[in-house]
Image: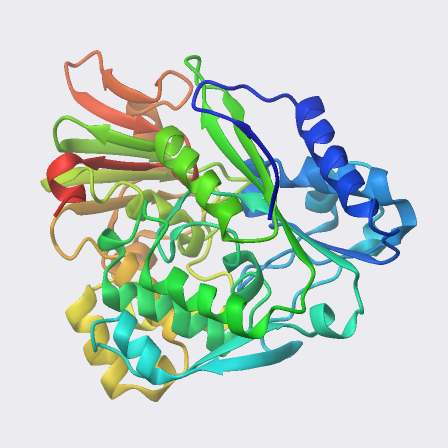
Length: 427
């Protein structure tokens, strides 16, 4: 059921608008009986701009001590710090937060047969897929579970959020790894910006067959950028089924998708150091621009906060060992190495992070050396030198012509959109 919908590509919703829409919906739910025990599942700090933080704060304001637990949907990300929690969730007591331990605090709700996976991947894969969630969702006896987050084009599933927040954000190692590998093998450029994809169908199967008893309410935002380059909230959608996600996806495609007239020769992406500390996250600069880059084009990534490859130590080790060498090479590595077979999420990431030799990727990290960057098959450039050439404080999002006559395309936050030129997107 769709409880609340507001917004279009020209809307600017204030925080008060979000609060009003949330409170209106929660009031409707409580008309059928007082809710006594609530769990909130917002994203982590890597989705700070999603407005899920302030919506979680409003949820606490509404429910008070009935909101007993908050479980950030970490997936495989690094746990949030106290400083990040206080900044993202103002007014919410820190003692409510739980850490998602994706390798052990897991319950399997059911298993999707390999025949369905084969059908979705055109016969490329045929393993079973476990629908896993954090055990708190099952054992907490919650009368309501709030799943909060932003719908935006995504490299693994096509469009982010909805049941991905549950089965990946609070999922287990096997489920996360296999879902990422399904998307990588099927082809990320066939999925990004599309709501209906093989990975989404897998998640929908899990929702429809194994999660009927979980009282989940999805609270989804769409965030865009105004003419001045400022982030604005374009939409709020609240519901308990696919319709909520579908509406949000339709708006996100209008707001977050930039279709370009021509391929881009040079793209410069800036990674905010507060959000991006690894190539695991920072490679959104690659995922979200790859369909816009020309053959033999150049992507320059200004990454002052990047100091590691993986958020998880084991994944970091695997990235350092195998590097970003493209689909064919990575699949060979998977066949030959049990450690990658047991970490298909890392293997998927290695595929996603390669340009497949079509364009060059130059990383300018604040905390990794030339040797480290070049060892994983990226080019390296000094952050200090490149910021002098491409100063984020002087560039505007979109096309820029520099004083030397060079034309570049600048992106201040790759997590907020998807860029493509029509020939590659439609291929």
